[in-house]
Image (cartoon, rainbow, N blue to C red):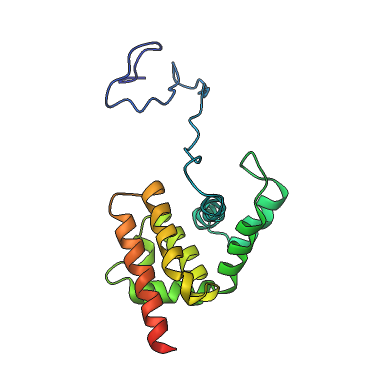
Length: 178
């Protein structure tokens, strides 16, 4: 394989550190994994991230969130079972999927859902479900802050500002219509 570093060769700035096959057709063996730094995240944030994983996978596989949730309850890709709160969040989103996508499409000025990064789309969908259909007025700001922090951890440089602004816009519009 041309351009691939030799085994044991020092890594370059262009080399992502992923294992490469030594020759065409050979299987790649992953030698190590680097777990995410979740020690600095609250339990509630980790539960939200696990729910986001389900939404992200459903979007990627073009399945409903409930179909993927059912699969995750039987066999999880993570080392631990899906927390009950993560399940509740996915079910909340699934009950309001059409309204949430319509609200996001309406208020995301110049950013159709299909053009958004998949992680941002999952964060916005779950955040919208929680702030619009479950949260009390007094905690909505805190929840928006949590989803902004999640976008900071999991997505691109501009994502936290985008997530924060769009979730806040949805809450403001809902307040005007109430």
